[in-house]
Image (cartoon, rainbow, N blue to C red; front, side, top):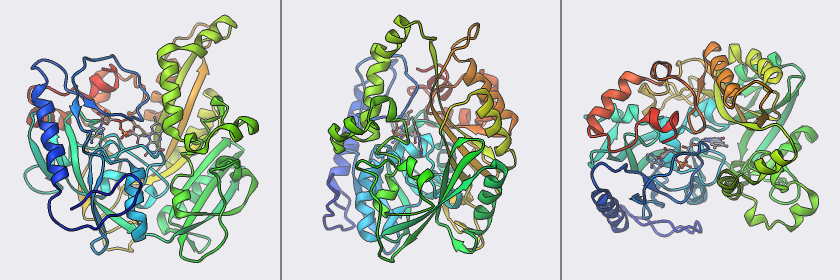
Length: 483
Ligand SMILES: Cc1cc2nc3c(=O)[nH]c(=O)nc-3n(C[C@H](O)[C@H](O)[C@H](O)COP(=O)(O)OP(=O)(O)OC[C@H]3O[C@@H](n4cnc5c(N)ncnc54)[C@H](O)[C@@H]3O)c2cc1C
């Protein structure tokens, strides 16, 4: 096996074990051994898409610097062997020349495969293929006990395979994953369907999720945006090999605005996969990147989600904008950055509640359904060997379609209210709607509720087996206590 370099230029591949990979795993082991007992063991990783700020820890960190590449793409088997800290940007660069893509490609370029599997990713193909962990065939995990384990849906370590998704790196770190790939055409045609009624939008979601088509035309990808309860859009994408014109939203035009302006559109497959990264959905607006003059001056290579994220982290540290707000006498603001999954039969009601009580706009909508075993073609996405498992730490009911609702911003703290109150109200509303909340951002659950929602018993059993000395920070401590 050979590594694919960062430029995406493929080098010849063969099936020999990559010496680079072996060396990288040895470096990881050595860095683990160097952490004194009693000190927390954490990743030393350059990029992150986590939103919760956390307490600073000591200098010790696991060396994962050599685990950022693609090991092997097998076009015949439609699989890829990928190192745990490989970004999706690099992974897609390696698979697209074969006309293949990972079944689900999270929209932000620097999300890593290991991060998306342990921290849950989602994208417009999730109504067919579920979440990234559902197309993992096997993975090597460097556990909290310092052992390298190859986990699959069956065999000795099936419990780790099942408990890894949503464990947020608290059981071990994936060093290599073998994933399924799907064939795609080089171009995506898009239908931007407007809805003045959320119930009608949700009915359309259900139709596509059940049949894989809308009004007779096949649908490979589906997401949407709500600007308000009376203005929302569903975007239906179909990969195609037919040539034709394509739009470009990496320059002056801004993708999310196009949904209001165009009913039909087309992008290259590459631009489609990263359509949301250029403006971090719409979150580039506060940085000035959508102002026509500043946008022209802003080098396009810096219009990327990781650049905005870095700016935001500086703000987190120095709180410049918060201080200016304070001087101007503006109300303090509560960060409300969440992705939640609501079953379709409750989704329209939840969105109306959200618009009334939180009133942030726009809101991202992304349908999601667990992959189901069964003969290929029996429903969109069926037939996965990896899908037979249960995922106790993020249990989505099989056969039920959910809508992921994503909202990323801040709201003024009302007089008499506390920081966190809006997030707590959202947590209650999500549970009331039989939904789930992903855990990359702030969470306020008490331990008992958290255990009930996120598979506490399965988690504890896996923790005792794979990290008996609790060298890695626990899930609740990471997510709720921000450690
Ligand atoms: C604003 C925002 C929007 C988002 N939108 C989307 C979205 O649209 N689609 C989507 O799919 N996801 C989205 N996410 C969630 C994102 O996919 C997860 O947070 C994911 O875990 C990030 O991966 P990362 O590689 O950046 O990991 P990091 O942010 O570096 O780490 C996340 C957690 O995973 C652990 N971890 C990292 N690598 C590994 C590994 N190899 N093995 C085990 N544990 C590991 C870390 O310890 C940490 O606890 C969003 C997040 C944010 C902040």
